[in-house]
Image 1 (tube, rainbow over the protein chains, first blue to last red):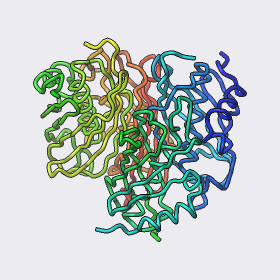
Image 2: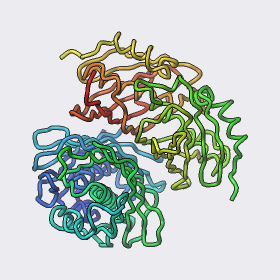
Image 3: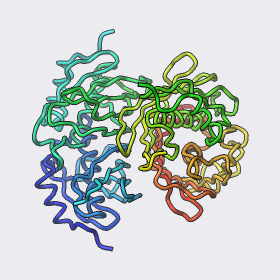
Length: 140
Length: 140
Length: 140
Length: 140
């Protein structure tokens, strides 16, 4: 099954409508009918004391990955919104790019649940997130 | 009981060591021994489809508020890190400044747990977060 | 505003339809239009290594408290179900009864979000939970 | 790498020290150095309105699965305790036995993070949980 939105179309949405994500260089690498892979390039701006990447930067990556997975599964339901997100920060990532790999756990009529693994450049798991998106009734 | 770090000292940390938070204008308004109040000024950059403030911007505010509460309670343990954060997005805030009010629920030797109410300019509760910070053994 | 379900009606639901909660003696103490107070009496069966009350027993109390708050706000929508629940265990409670105090944070058309403080007999906060209930479309 | 606690030893702990879990028939099926598989047999006592298995019963299964994974990885650190647990209920399971498959995401000196998939008898994913255990300093 192919995704209902392709990578280029998603990255256009990031560029035009998610300024906070575009500003830090987030881009989707691949979308499928059941998931998404999204990249956060390295930038000094993400650092925090300890020389590691800040929690909010990792959260932003995980949340955009979930949004990509939902839009890939349903088409451009741009008004889908996060209702709940839980993130565990497991290890302090080395400075470098991070990749988020999202998998849809549930795709209901009203809610989607997605889990995301965040990996550093050595493919070490640095964070794990689970989130719920509310799907607007009138899709479009 | 007075806080172990004052607002000016915390805002200096934001300015010098939390570039991702400083870039969006986050500043603490008040600190006490048991909590903190932190402001996110309005900026178009935080918007997302639907004309509302993005989840990652709200997460960033909530996380910095928890960090402020921990440093106010313990002094400048700058290497304290979030281990877990759960956030519920309750209502789409109107465009405008947001305020986060954090309260320490537990202050242990190794872990602190903080809850945060995020209010919009009309003092409507728009998000609620709970998080755990790991406290470094050697404080300083 | 008075609740749409009274304490006796809720406790009848517990007794007749929530056998896992009735078995451990959970009962609502009070319901209001915006919250609920629910009791878990002490029983050796709830203990775990360390002589403290088990996490699952506290979770059960918190979840029933959320259910009580939702039914008090909406009437007997018995098929309302938890979609997500996060619980932080803050302190090991002394053996004794526990009380859960639930407050509705959001009451939407499709989702309700509730937070719960769990207190021990000395009114020390021992756990904090936040949960989301999905509200069935056809209420009854 | 073999687990530091075997299934029989874990099930003895359940029987002798986790009365709330033993009462509902929870038993571990397998333990490894990095995870655990735990069973909740079907019992009418777990039902709730809608004829489905109650959230607290599923939480109890997930939590015991995390405890099994931690003890399998570290040996019988019986006083390890849950500090935080988040659970998403994805689908209403059919009445029948449930299996929890736990995987350790992080094993630190002070904290372990575990994720759990809960499957019904048809191996449909019905719930997903992530939790943190605090590891006592003096292990034994």
